[in-house]
Length: 337
Image (cartoon, rainbow, N blue to C red; front, side):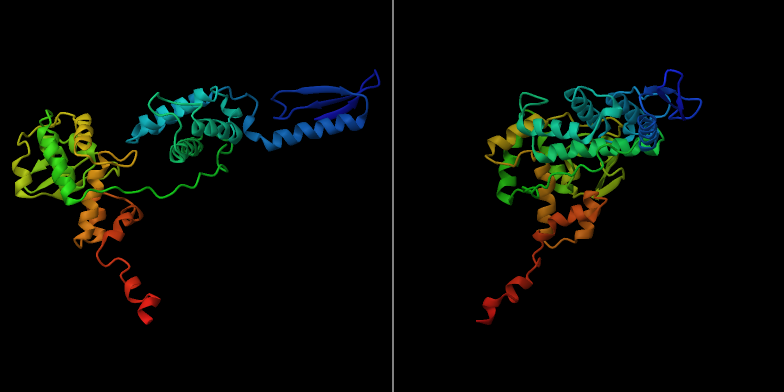
């Protein structure tokens, strides 16, 4: 890097921002001060953005998504879901160069998602803050993983973007009477496996997908073993003799049930049960956990049954315990009057 005076009286700044083997930048100025200021400007740029290097990174954000998925996302149970969500967001933002992707661009996209200007389907227009929080988390995690893999050396462009604060979701659960009504409607369904799948979820706290995808080898006298779970750990849950009797007894590695999610939606509707958005089949898991705690179950045992890796998730059901915060009744000031 140097500033020299030319024969024409002008001053030339010659800069190699990435070393002698890299790109050369030359500019002519009327004064030496201007040339030196330009030289400092180029040096500062190179220092602030050392990751740019000699060769400009021409990858699009979708290219990063593909790289992330092949190197890491493919191992996640929701990897394809994340990939699809990020690819949709990328194209909605104009599929920018990865080096031009920034917080402002994502914030604008997020605003348009919340207002319904950008939609993924005709069924859902404006999304909830929780949805865009998930999308933010997906992108953050992707950049962090690529940094760990030495495939991205720049700072995470979304590291300072804050999530929206959202109210704790209502955990809908069914009363015993509602369970009876639901089972009655399931019995009427043309989907032969519906009532069995529902009973499995209610008896073991299984997620719908875990119950619906059961193979014959996962069913044994006295227990069901869930594999390939969301928490990545297998878990065995005891079952009653009555439940075991209605389960298929075929020792096979293939699913023993036919998918019937839409039939379950119909049964819920016919039973007159109203649920919060996004809590259709999961109401069965909530119902198991709620009644487990109401009948005096141990929260740590519930964590193992549900397969939660974090006890904080299970603690959502703690308030169903009969003795939960009962001191409020005994020690409130009205008892002193």
